[in-house]
Image (cartoon, rainbow, N blue to C red; front, side, top):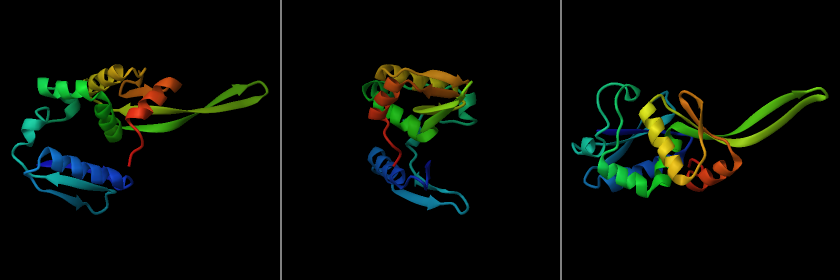
Length: 167
């Protein structure tokens, strides 16, 4: 069974998740299930073939096991790095306005700028995200060991073209 947790704050994301799941596994029914007390809805699909499409899935925590793309997956990601980056940032990332205060003799100076953050504990997923950003020509760096940051004005503008807002 495949479960996708979609935040209720992004109703368009739920619709896209249902559509994508149906397109990828058309022989399997797709249904939604809300969990009481949790602000998300699960998109679910039952098929014995999901492990064929997601061989990275397995027992244990994803940041403690190897995550590698198969050759056929790598071919898809190489052809569509923007779509891959969009999926990563929509699932484990965000676009924020970073506000910075600089204390000066004559008073504080404030400025702000847009920035993308991608947070994940898996070094392999960081590597895959970094490779996708490199393919897109987007400058990035690690803000923390678990966080990729895209903060240069031109890099944010370029990533905006591929990621766009959460729906």
